[in-house]
Length: 110
Length: 115
Image (cartoon, rainbow over all chains, first blue to last red; front, side):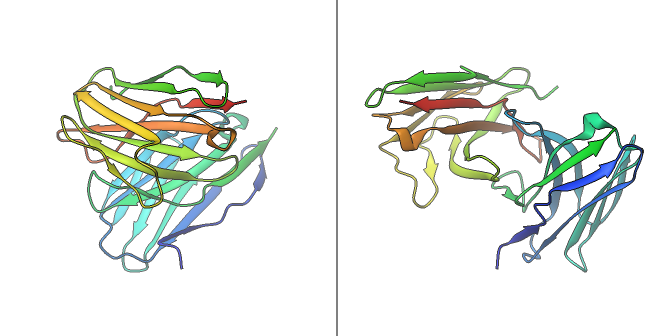
């Protein structure tokens, strides 16, 4: 079993839809949870960062962490074609080694 | 803030030659830098972790004599692919973190093609 599981998709939704991306994990020691967005042939860009459980909102993006269920989510409201990318969840026990999910390929159709 | 650059962005070389990739933190001091490799449609694979002034720690299965990492200053780390072969062709990405930062910031990546 992988430490972090993420559905690789692909996921295709119409413009304006709410997108839900999810990851599950097995290591209860993880304290830091991140979502990165990666466009084709580019490096990952930090989108959301959360420490421990709870919600965090930034514009159209909301990150949720449920440590009791070992489950994290990223919601994108009013999705735009420019949101089309691969979304990677990542987590760690500290600033050191990140453990990544497989990444979900998302396409927003105009 | 927290900008990381890489150079070159892409490189083509002949089999048997060595290639150096630079990773720089532009607006913070990077106490730790990481090097990743990414194959098409796959996630990032950590190759090694380097702390400024120390030898790099390599992940299992990564040949340290083939992938030489130097982290000589708080803003620069280099990855040298020695005697490159076509199977070394990949997307190499660095990341960095510094004091008080609890996550990593990634560079734009370097695409290596070995002919």
